[in-house]
Length: 100
Image (cartoon, rainbow, N blue to C red; front, side):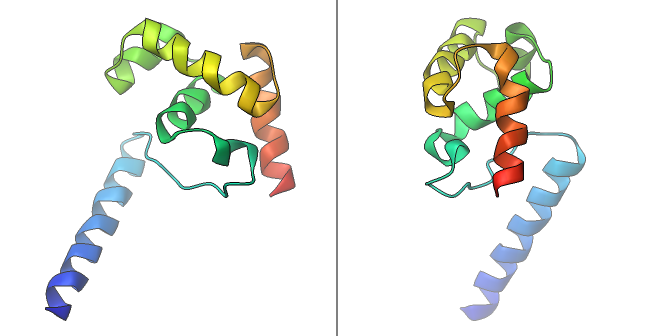
């Protein structure tokens, strides 16, 4: 049974590496006490893409969501990050990286 688990772990690692290489957004756990750690995995995906300059429509297409759902995720994420606008996202994420 150990070899089956090892095989599963290797397969999962390879799948994550291929997703990263293709540019897909994958859930990377954040410490719960960090601002990004307060976000749901989907909120983190949306916030990262928005901070990179993607529009709601572009984010929706990439994550297979509706633009309205993207807007909802952003609306819920802003107070968790201590910001009130999309324009503040890049700085909020930069501050997060500096404080890690």
